[in-house]
Amino acid sequence: MRALRTMWAIAVREFVALFRVPVGWLVLALYAGLWGGMFVQFVLVPGAPATMRPLFATAAWLMLPIAPAISMRLVSDELRTGSYELLATSPVSELSLALGKFIGAGMFLLALLGCTLPLVGVLLVVSDPMPDPGPMLAGYLSMTLLGLLFLSVGLLASSLTASQTLSFLGAMLALFVWLLATTAGRTRAPEAIGDILASLAITDRLEGFAKGVIDTGDVGFFVVLTGWFVLAASMCLGVRRWL
Image (cartoon, rainbow, N blue to C red; front, side, top):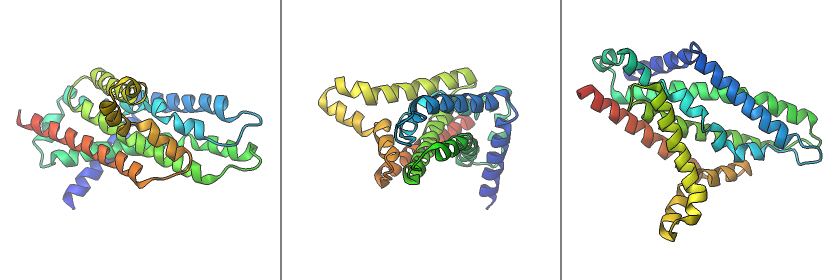
């Protein structure tokens, strides 16, 4: 119970801290702007079916600069200010610390996605007939899973450096290479490597959610990889504690 209370305290602290720095509000504004622009361009099309599938199908690319911006300060700021030494000497385990920071960033992600809900209301009001709510719910589930996966990558990058800039660039570059390799790259790779890249493709799995299909295999893909990156971040923190 003590570990859970500590983890929750860290999560709340991180969530509140993201609203105390300009980057948090900039990220909210940027994501809302990106979603608004895409919504007007590809969803509010006269005569077109009322669906948000174009937004959900491109969610990975929309989230590419957002998740690293949220996660870049999670550990890097502690290392830069020297406050990590206090955490390292406390009875808080590395896994609890990593999970607490990850949960705090995840709560901010949910607030971020909540800012897009008014667009759903607009679509429901102007559409006739009204769109099927199933694909919308599946789409938002996919964006949550995607955002958490990207945040876990950002958490790992943040645990490797005291520079928020390097953390941001490292996470975004890693995610960009991942997306590029599993889309355009896999068509040019040898068949054996192409099959591996296809199994790691994020965009393919998002298309299924965008159609309203919730596959447990796709959900497990995001959950397992997210857990792996959070665990890797906790291991990095453990190494730092003993250095």
